[in-house]
Length: 450
Image 1 (cartoon, helix red, strand yellow):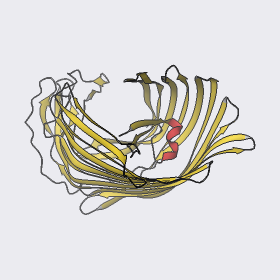
Image 2 (image 1 turned 60 degrees about the vertical axis):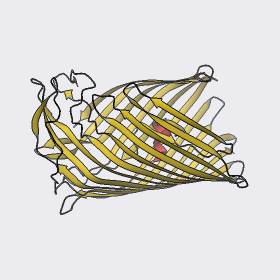
Image 3 (image 1 turned 180 degrees about the horizontal axis):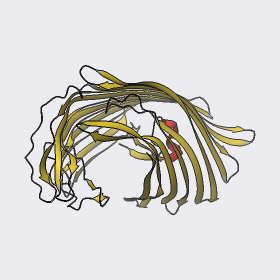
Image 4 (image 1 turned 45 degrees about the vertical axis):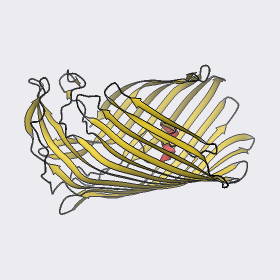
């Protein structure tokens, strides 16, 4: 991985079916024309460590460059038991033309990691239970074991000094199985837990993503414009084959934890197996950043999305979602450069997310929709140090949640929820060898209509 980008608010709205909070964009390392490489190793205070290697360079006599990265991890988990193990390998190749570049990348990862359900909250105190944060409430067999693959093709062609065309395609696949003992109920008076052993045996999810963009930097009627327009297609497919379900057992106390009373379960639930989701999405989008003056920048974007989805489960198979819909989602933003080092901004955006009711037999669910407002400031402090502060207010409708009704998990939607708060980020280089990244966030979330 070259770097991890966090795209927040409207900056992320052109990238598909997303939450209004934004997205995490992992930028992979690309081949370089100059030979270079590195080997590194790390250790942790919990025990164990990891190692990585990276080598890149040109292929002599051609316009090609290569890169090969890989690594191994074997680390003790930060809580009272568990081990994280993984290996990965990632070759890539780039062709450099006069006005074009084409890169092909592939990565494969094998992993074995704790399936940690985290802590539990006391509904009376509305706080996490008062135990050591390292104490787990499950069993040592709570493990996810799988492998993932990613293949990418990226092409870029400079049409002229003002316009650039880009094409990206990716295919990802993740196959895994897991086992878990999970908390089903908590008695706040005694600290006793009711737990159930579940498992997923044979889960496969695949995703195809295609995107074509046209970017331009042009003057129109005397104003400078940064224009982006494009189309995209996504195809997502999920199949969970054998779903293991056992009975609830009262066997664990959070203040006196004892492990080993529950074993792995092998009972396949016919009604819950063969969980399937198929989703396709087609979209077109356009955005313009208009430089009104040397201090004012206005941004406007519009995305159209059409999707179909199909979902169900069970033996025999029961279809519980078969829907299609379309949506227009706009975004607006305004930036004022108070000084060369200080910018003020305000923006508004809409998002939506299709939802399937795979958790129960209740039929189609309406898509989740949201409206997000944000104001803030960006500071270029000194020597490459930047800081951001933002106030946000997000309102959502049809938020999916689940609850247990008897032995069945039922999916429902909340009428309207609100999240508002503040985020502060600080990032940059203190010295040639020292970087700093610091973030703080406060969120006040509330269900307004149920």
